[in-house]
Image (tube, rainbow over all chains, first blue to last red):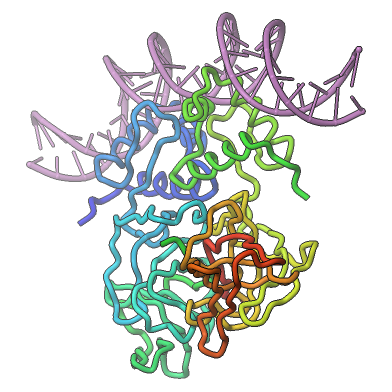
Length: 203
Length: 203
DNA sequence: TAAATTACCATACAAATGTATGGTAATTAT
DNA sequence: ATAATTACCATACATTTGTATGGTAATTTA
């Protein structure tokens, strides 16, 4: 269970994430400037609180070395966030950052993230176990697109169909039945749209 | 057209990207340390060259403020050298025919190039018409790997097998028979090894 | 009521950082 | 043959940066 943050701490955490996504994490002075503080010591204390509560990690003495450890793994830029099920849902491993054998080639764009596909339920869409899908959380998901969704604390990759009375998630493999969700389904959220695929051939 | 980079400049650019992916861009001192330089002035000059050639942008006076320009856009236009046949050979276009918008996630190694696959002869290797393959010409081609080869002025993507008396190029599709080449075959050259694959889901 | 906690302030300091200047040697271009 | 470029070096300097210490006031918790 995450410790409570004060309003100001939340705003600073938001700013940290925002800046990191834009390019580089801010210095203490830049944070102070943003929030109108007249010195860096104030910022230092806020960051200390954030670190104590487990939301960030700092590297002593290093400039801009603020790492956001948000529990919302899906929107934090990481090389590979976890594995996502194309067949039956798998739990996402929050901290298994797969720096793996993506030798020279894979890196994170600012607003997207990577997931490694497990299972072959999307084989008719030519996506196979081991492929890396590139997921963009900032574009609207349209009917017919392949999306990543959260369903009861697990993540799946499926083709989305928006129907009159609800939503359907299809595998592109006759062995798997579609998941049908009525409107106002709880514990369901579309995380993002699969915009690309990368596969490494090294073996 | 991007200006040419020297080998050292390429390596530094790679390091910049690598570090940014890991979290934050490096300081001059960190770059110097990585490459064994005894002072930061050397790094400063290399960064100056990179900036002059348009690969990075720096913000004066700000620490770690190195922006890799090609990484900031979501898509990097990359030349596709030609189309390569996975079925029957197709001619390679001498000048780049097409540009593909690679997401920044798929970073081109500097010594590799892209080819667009036509035909479905490699479908059992999960490579399909329209996919972009990343080809590295500077690594040795081993038996069993998927390679790009020139055969009588046309290019093919096939799986390579090195045998006693020659070379075989297999399609991964029963509809296509393997191409068998005796030793010292003329007009044959292995262009490179397929090290990766990218597919865009945008329509 | 007393004790933390939160949210700022001011000042200070060593180290880190970007930048500038000038030099050497090797290679490449004119 | 001369000039330009590349690839380093050394030294120096003003800022920037993280950090530390100590203080004030308001709010919350025990």
